[in-house]
Length: 378
Ligand code: ATP
View 1 (cartoon, rainbow, N blue to C red):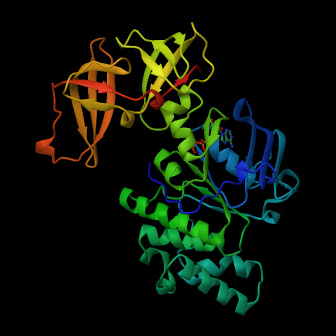
View 2: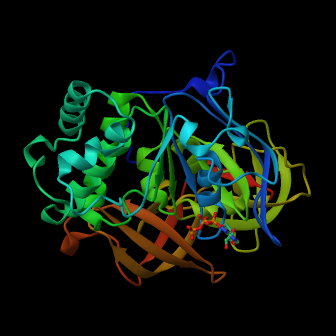
View 3: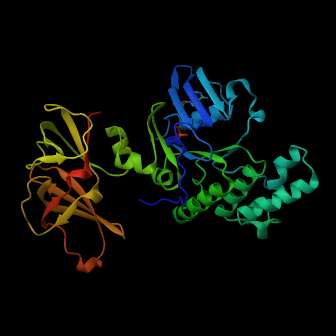
């Protein structure tokens, strides 16, 4: 999994560390719509925290509550011990960067960055120095005299970031900050944004529906569904150890075998599924007793694929390659088992396309290690 982070920031593991931002049992209703439902969430200083979820799940409402633009229907929100609900938005140590940047078209890059500092009536010398520092930070010093329309999308994004950071907010809220950029530029900008965040050490909170973006950039991710936070964790945790089928399916591709726990061995539990003839042996078990109905979840890259048919004691299946999706660095193999179930296995493309050893209609064996699947019950 790709990550743009160099530093390891993990204050949430330190029990003596005080959260910088706290949502305490926060709900927000708009008439009959419950946009946010009883959310409690701690975010720590210096984090790049992402709220990730599908359209309408409540993530923008969370951001607006934090910025003080909306008041919660119930619950409390604190930023650095300031009660957000009792403070006017302009008195909060928060700035927000919107999706389409909202740069002033008639102002130069320099004046755009200086705007908030001038509004705050800060000294001329200070403003000049701060603007230079910010333009340097986002690598836009050479473009200071241009107008926004004379810039590329990525450059506009960097000016908006410089403007948002100029007044040194303690918290920067980013609403889909890369949505206006095309795919290649978006990937490059993800790394730039993380580098800048690591330099300024401001707490960033980003709203996105793009899981790859959240995985690449965040210290931790809060996955939302219907106004609730389903799981909070590092990108690695939510990917490797999803706490529910919802999260497992939301982040990346998964293979799911529904079945029943038939025995508990010392190192693994055994699950029988109607979709696969061999036993599923699962090392990581979340308290599922014998007889429990469970789902065994396996990521495609954990499955090995081979044309050499061999029999293994468990965790293997024989099938036919029905489809191959070539993605450049990896290929996805869609393999149909005898039960009809399609299992997806990812393999790195170490061979050139014409030399690939597994191809359409091949009879193959799929197999994986006991520790590479997990059991979920919800
Ligand atoms: P998107 O990714 O589409 O922006 P979201 O996850 O950010 O979605 P929210 O904008 O937080 O979702 O909206 C959550 C729910 O609250 C939606 O059902 C939305 O229609 C509703 N909602 C948000 N703001 C208002 C409002 N001012 N009045 C009424 N309903 C609202």
